[in-house]
Structures are given as structure tokens and as C-alpha cells.
Length: 227
Image: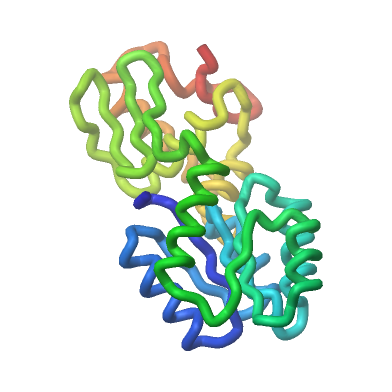
């Protein structure tokens, strides 16, 4: 299940590092946060598929973080980490929208198995192929093929392509694309988006005058053709 991004929110560095190592061994991309506040600040930059969330955090506790995640990022899965004897907090977390929980101390194999099960349930097509005509996108492998030929895309080009392809027909302005693809903490020139769109078109369209995949909506931004 490589290609999935996971944010680990745990204030104890040894536990956080232990989780990160085991997840990376299983092909996951991992970011870390030591507090709820740091986790929320990283959300747009990281765009995780799943958050591993300790309930007992300093400052903003895990229940409050879970509540905010469900409100602002309903598409993101949440796996809670709880200590023995925290039955009521566990129930509250599940009622608040957490997808599952693991009790500390936990077996790393169980943690990875629970995460994979959640991802298969919440993102049933996330590993699957996305097709538009002769264009095929493979999210987990981070590969794109056009007419059966593998295209060479940079990391950012792929992220931009995948984001647009997963939102067909919807128009995004430059600032929205910067927030979703580059992260909300990116403060570069919005025209950076235009540069990357041109690069993608050159690789996808083979010099065609009329774009077949990425359309310009003049005065607004860009969209992926829905049909």
C-alpha cells in the first residue's frame, strides 16, 4: 500500500519514532507532529490519507483534534491511540468520528494491519488505476502512462496532475492549487502554477493546440475535463 501519506500525532518521541519506522518499512510516507496544534498546522501541507492520533496530548487533546479533523477534513481517516483504562475516551473518540483505535502498548504488526484495513475501507479506489482515454494514472506507484508509454513527471507535477484528475469538472484558481498541492505555507509566486500546467500539457498533449485534459477557465483558473 505504498503511496499513502500518514501523519503521526504523538507527544512521546520514542513512541512516535517507533511508529514512523514501522510504517516506513511498509511503504507509507510519514510525517510527525508532537502536539495537536502542530498536527493541524501540518494538515494542508501534508495532505495525509490517515492520522494516527494519540488521545492524551499536551495542550489541545486528541478528542478536540479529532473533532476538528472531522469538521475540516472529513475525507481523512483517523486511528486513535489510547492507554488501557481510557474506555470512556475511546468511546467519545469513536462517537466523534474516529475510524478505529489501538490500545497501548501495542504490537506494531497489529497497528500496521489496522491502518491497512482502514485505508482499504475508506479509500477503496485510492490504490486503483485512474483512466481518462489513453491516459492511465497509478496513484500508489506514482506513475502515469499515456498510450501505454510511461511519462517522466517530477514529484510536484505528479501531485498536481493527480489532484486535478481526482476532481474532474471543478475549477481551481491558482491560490487553491497552491494550497492543495504545494501546501498552505508555500509563499511563492502564484504564477508557479502556470509553469507547471504548461509542463504537464507538454507531456500529456504532445503539442496539441486544444488541451484534451487540463482546461483553462479564463479569469478563474484551471479544471480537469470531466468527460
